[in-house]
Each structure stands twice: as structure tokens, then as C-alpha cells.
Length: 257
Ligand code: HEC
Image 1 (tube, rainbow, N blue to C red):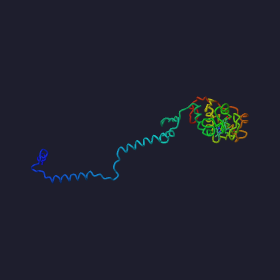
Image 2: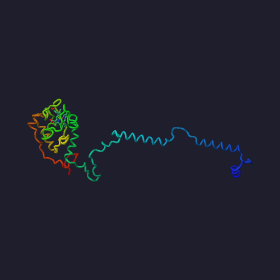
Image 3: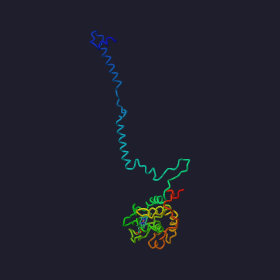
Image 4: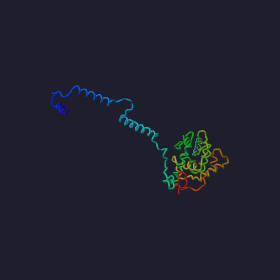
């Protein structure tokens, strides 16, 4: 077979060593087999092309970025609390949150309690001029602490420190469920925010005194008014002053060791 096939490449096969019909038959059989082998069945399970997968990835990336910007998908604020620092590894004692200067720590606590007040007095403490007075620069916020505590715990029957009466003329009591810690915090906060800067801390001990003074008023459960404030509450709450730079535990407000 090798001689004739070699011959056929160089010159015509004059000896007719190749059986043409046999060769054709072989060709036909082989190509039929090839066709059978290569037949592609379309049954829906074909692998997806790579570019489709890549396109999906890009769409997901963009969608993730958009949702993330809206603050929903990739917002870690609720997972990682502000100012919280993990304690030492197991085995060591948990060091808890990092100590903070008392003025900042009490104010931070108070800022949370101020959510009780901001519906009326506003997030900026400026009130609205008609129904709610401003706490910024208010004489009853600054100065003696006892009157401020009495207003927060019992509410206020107008007029206010400026002689003006606002809206319905009465502020409802805010003392329900308020602990000494909360009261100390919110007083320290309003005395050092909105442009107010008393620079001092109302301690938990002072706030606890305020709770007692409030409970032993002649007419407990009624709002205080200007006369009662002038006659009885123009004083500082008793208790030892706390240096505003003293380091305290921001969670408990107790002095840090
Ligand atoms: C429901 C509305 C409301 C809430 C809540 C409220 N207040 Fe008031 N507050 C008033 C009104 C109204 C007055 C004025 C009362 C008047 O004119 O008789 C007032 C007056 C005051 C005053 C006197 C200001 C001055 O200069 O005379 C202080 C201080 C005060 N509020 C602090 C607070 C604090 C602190 C809180 C949160 C713990 C609070 N208030 C929550 C409505 C509110």
C-alpha cells in the first residue's frame, strides 16, 4: 500500500492500484462516524459561557456598591459600637471600655437621654421660639443645678426664666424611670452643649440628692414654677465636685482604676 500511495502524490495512478469506489466507501463511513461523535445534543445543561459569569459579577459589584451607599448592605455602625474597645484576650481580665474624661463621658451618656427632650427643645437645643423655649443660654440650665434638676424631674409650669410662657404653658415631667446616672448625664450634657459651657460635671451623687429633694417637695407630682424655684431651688446640689478631667469608665461612669 505504501508504494501506490506514495506514487499517487507525485503523479497520476496510471496502474489504477487504488480502488476508487472502495476509497469513497471508506471516506463515507469515516465521515458518518465523525458526525455521530461530534453531534451536540441541546438539552439545556450546557455550561454557561464565561462572559455571562463575568457580567453577573460586575452587576453584583455595582449593585452592592449602590446598596452599601444607601447604608443598608455594608453598614457596620450597628455591629461596631462607637468607642468600644475589645478587652484583653481570654485569660487576662477584661479591661472593658477605654477610660474617658468625666465631662465627655457624662455628656455622652446625657446625649442619649436627651432623646427624651429633643422632640420639643430640638436637636440643637434652640427650641422653636413659639411652643418650646431654647435651652441655649438659658439661665435655668446654667448656674445653680438644683432648679434644673427640679424642672427635668417634675416639669415646669410657665413662665420660664425669661418671663415668657411657651405654647401650652407647661412642660411635662421627665423624671419617670430616670436613674441618678441618667439625670447626671443629661444635666451635664445640656449644661455643656448648644453653646452652653458650664465646664462642670453633675455627679451621680448630686443627681441622687436631686431625686430625694424632688420626692420630698411640698407638692410632689406637680410641675415646679417660677415662685417655687426662686424660693427653694436656687442652689447647687450638694455633693463633692468632680474634676472634669478625671478618667471614668464610660459605661458605668465610675472612676477608672
Ligand atoms: C413635651 C415637650 C417637652 C419635653 C419632652 C421637654 N420639655 Fe422642657 N420645656 C417644654 C416647655 C413647653 C417649656 C416651657 C414651659 C412654659 O412655658 O411654661 C420647657 C421648659 C424647659 C426649661 C426651662 C427653660 C428656661 O429657660 O426657663 C428647661 C431647662 C427644660 N425645659 C429642659 C428640658 C429637658 C432637659 C428635657 C428632657 C429631659 C425637657 N425639657 C423635655 C417642653 C418640653
